[in-house]
Image (cartoon, rainbow, N blue to C red; front, side):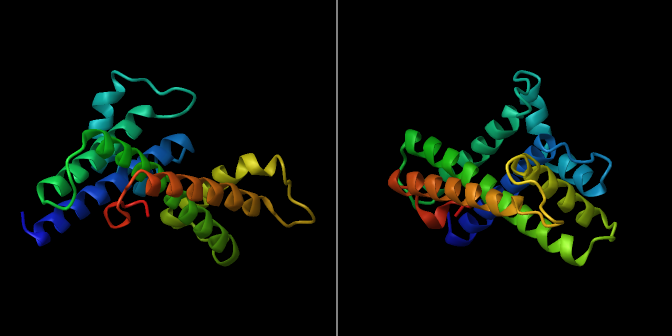
Length: 191
């Protein structure tokens, strides 16, 4: 397999994984399913999760089947790296690296959602574009548990600070575990 073909297939699998993780967030954070962006992403990536969801039901609000599909897609991306000769074949490492990549991607997407939500709360408070509404909705749902510990004070909401601290802690911890497991940084979409 040529380097260009490997790059193309890996990039397509990574984009598909991002869509699956967004689908996971839509379900976890109870996004508005009538939003056209949500409907488009779900139509594009939800079929494999639907099949698995018929066997594995969501538990505690977590759509485990979507996470399993994301891990399988990342495993296939790592397997393609094996066929391209980029890494050695070790099924346990591939599975472990896939899990780390998916969780690192979950944290990275959450970071971008939170950052975009904060910026949009300053500059687009009345804009009703579907993308802006979706980002504000998702970021508010992420910040909601942190508002229990840091309620708005004097009109200022400090809960995003606590949310970023917790998220960065989790990112650093998972990154360290991933590096210690031998995950090549260039191969993971989560880094």
